[in-house]
Amino acid sequence: MAVFLSESREATMAFAAEYAKTLSAGDVVLLDGDMGAGKTVIAQGIARGLGVKEDVLSPTYAYVNSYEPMFHFDCYRIENVRQAEELGFADYFD
Image (tube, rainbow, N blue to C red; front, top):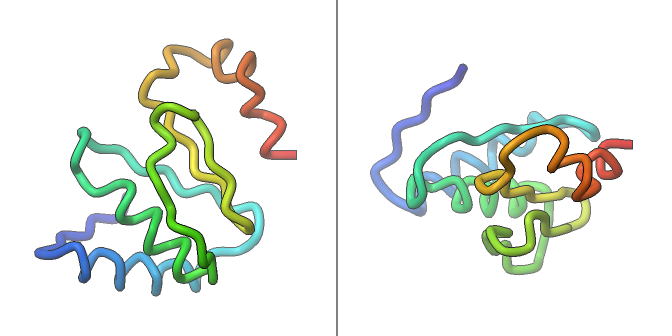
């Protein structure tokens, strides 16, 4: 597990944009933290590093947002594997 300590939103975005350059198609990045911990900021930085031009928003109410070439999932309200399967999450990994 990697640990990154940031002192600002800008530093987090820059770190994540650089980190995105190490990713390959099919890679999965899991972010775990309390609400407000910066998970969406990291996703925004990764998206920027992948060349996404759209505004990346938290998918809290949509469960998943698509930003080619990435999908941004929010599993906060997912209680078990069956629920994820019923929502069609597995389809995104094919």
